[in-house]
Image (tube, rainbow, N blue to C red):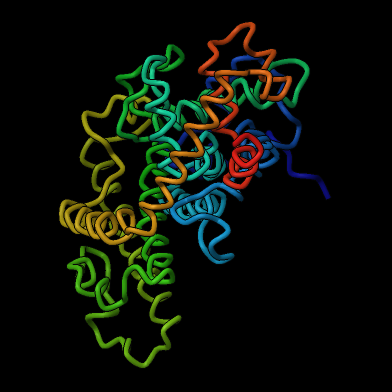
Length: 384
């Protein structure tokens, strides 16, 4: 038997993937050139480097919405990233895109998140307002370009252009300008797919966790218009005889989440295929220069998803329990920042060395952003 090697995998990509898929053999390469691996493609190596990184493991104890120690079954930043990767790979397979690139971008996209979820990010953004602010996407790039130190030949993980671009161009409230990337260009379709899968994942699992936490009820969720949606190509089981009332409470919750994820994924796939045909997308270059975003919901489902997100914002993200925890997170983050600014020697030696070449506030943000929730709590208790 002959082992399948990188050359074989790259040949299969050329034969089986769509003309607009990103091919590993045609990657724009790495900042620090490296010889190719005999068995794995460039994107497979990126995925593996991400999974083996320290920052990836730390996500197990970083807040998604609910604090990790509040329940073993609630999502963390790590389990969220795994769910995004699973949804992304399914969608990439259906569109004949590069699954390895898609998975790598999905697994890396939240590496730069702070402890305590978006509350922590908001605090660091305010504390760094005179230094350009803080953005978790840009921090993710900083993690893989600089902060991970695994190789003697170069800093960071030395990921490919396409994965790094997927980090920088992950959709956010603040557009990121970076000299390595052309701001006007769209990223690969694989990267756009991850953006949408990210939203699909958290819309689904925040409903699940919100119900588990007692913040919302199944009945409230079922009153949303998206529950009755039947876009092209999708058969709604709950409008066609599904015996929902006979299910147990757990089964009902799972059925609701499964329905929502399936609905959004199906709609995005059908609408994206329409946009590919509409704009005659036939290459990665035509993706980059398309006049509009290719990967998207249909207009109908986009409206219903907006209603769903508004519901989550009102009943989950602004819930009194979470607001109080966000206030405590802010106290912890601000105190840690001030203590380290007053005495940088309180930080590990590695970060003290970075002060020789980096702005003090940026180095402090690097240290705090890399903390898990429980480590931030521990350092807070040590320093108060």
